[in-house]
Image (cartoon, rainbow, N blue to C red):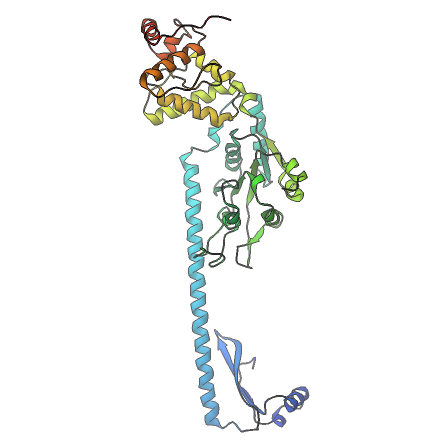
Length: 427
């Protein structure tokens, strides 16, 4: 049969002498006469179709054998067509998956080319920031897993992008996954992909982020939010470089450098049982702590200048001056939201600025100053009060409110009189 030859016998005694076991089996409970036609598919024997007489022995005339051969050929052709259809379908799915992967890679590569989130976005000259960049450059040349620690808004993603761009993987994409944004029931599919029909709604096969990042870098932001049940699967990829798609048993090898980031205290998460200890130690091979903005206040003027230039250009405005009083207020503020909060404050200021001098609209925690009201008159009065508060009620000269607002001192005094604004008495 394995040689592709037909096998038949009309009675048990037709079997070879060395097939005594088979003879005994057939005598007790087997068929009396058998003819078996091998089924060849793509040049290989994949099975057989057998015809048997169970009650009485019978001969197999040549005419009957030829007809049975024809039946076998029909089965073989049907199996060949089915196998060809399955192969074609699998090839189509593979092409579809590859197309999805290439499209995803193009998205990430276009982001890198735009340069809005590249390493050049790291601005500052403070010792604290220089230390971070030194460690990032140290580890960039290796494939070591990096854990970025720091508060929300400090710029952990920018550091991750810098590590990627300084590495040998820079020609491949840096793929970002925010573990806090994705629903728990979709994170596994997002990271590892899925097969068609793996779950309700999975109408096509889909490559996961690990496959898209193959040869490049995967940035896992908010890693502390990863569900406990998926942490073991992530640990396996980090250790062995392989995984299975959701709904598949086929192992997929990948070559990915992982950079993780968190604003949580992972040691506390480990003690509380919300984060695997082995995964924690696997991630913390090379930790880098990104300092909060309040610990590098000397970088604030550089950041403000860069944000004003970028946002003013984007808005089609020409803003070339940040008043001294406004800059001092920005440097005094503790910035709980860090660089992200600073950028938002500058963006609001740029939107509200009409002249060449930046008008800071936020109170930045100054006591006694409330947010701007909605009417035009109230808004003007609010802006004047904020400017006066920022400049310690100095009206004229360098660092005065008139210069900060971009109006002559006489105009400012008239507006103050109009709105009934007076300097509060000293305590």
